Length: 533
Image 1 (cartoon, helix red, strand yellow):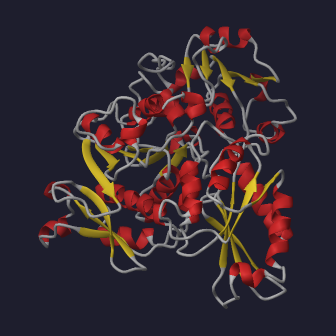
Image 2 (cartoon, one colour; image 1 turned 90 degrees about the horizontal axis):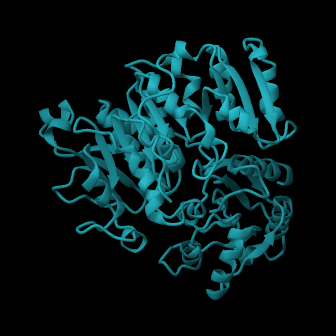
Image 3 (cartoon, helix red, strand yellow; image 1 turned 45 degrees about the vertical axis):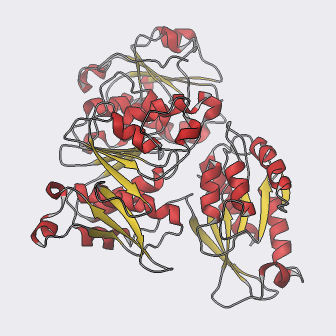
């Protein structure tokens, strides 16, 4: 399918141009993006039509939030719910598109005079320096660690994008001194193609693995949208890319000569200054950040850049490398690379290495990403259990990484709805076939079309599991029964004081069907755990 290219520029020349215009918001939703658009355009004097295929009952929380705000002129607002009408698109001066709606073949969007998104509007009017992050795994953790650290370091920093915060909520607070960290999905990037609106001071592409293949159909189309993050960068900007091997040679239809990984491909195309990240020490001629195992228990992170990019302290001391990452509070080897990338961006923003190391060491992680939220002690044998919510792990590779994040065996809960992905990496990890050190004590499967693909792969490898379960409550009930059984010591070993067993909910799939979205899934998991345990 040929990608859609939008016209350069914006439907509005100035914010004052919005007053009196007819704006249709396509998709209100429950995650805040649609609501932010409605509020923004009402505040700027537009006549707003909200259209959504969901009903008023389904959208009640968002509708109530808007309807009870006395600062909004609700006489300028109308809802068309449970359907879309062509006239609401034809007659609008501008349609605000939801990134989860394909423009190709959409008869409603085809009639629109102009199409924008909350991201495109924000980028057109902000003067803030942009740090943009995309990728398949680790986006949210990277942007969260980075925005936290920038604020702790004294910047007035804002965080938005795919992390469920629309940047329109803070547009008026930004200026040339307020860095904005944006998490951008492939869909959000696709909606910027041709606009010349995104020119990040720093762009980061995290690990690339197959994702959204039910939408794209092939990896090359998916990655083409990811590339838009650096499309308009120049030699004054920085592009931070993976250096480690991946499945590029397998997944790319026509690999580029001399490229062994996705990071190599991106590095060959961007006009920005290329910096790389790795789990191992980088070759001497490659600039960037890398991890180094100082001991079995401790991995440090180091930065090595061209002399002009090293800090004044490093230049004065003739240091070729500086440590920017030490001990972390968040679990998981995969989390270390996300924090390390945040550390590199901090370094480029002028934050001292030691200060970065201290601040990143205080970061406690984010909701729905290996989030520790509950502890429980068995009344039968005193066994101690910690519960972790990793509901935002929506690809099999992320779930596999979560299962290995604790330097010990875990009780693992996974499964959900398929989005055209290969579950073999997860099956190989859970069986130990890929060399993973820690096979789970037990595996509990949540029902779904993705789980249906995982089941035969587990059976082929003689991996035992419970389920699939059609509800979290039944699954957790079975888990509690097993933890309190007379045979618990045979399964989990004898209880040892202070040695808590992690229960990790990392679906590795989407949530649709049983839940509204991954956030709803994570919240319901946490609620049910606290109710049952």
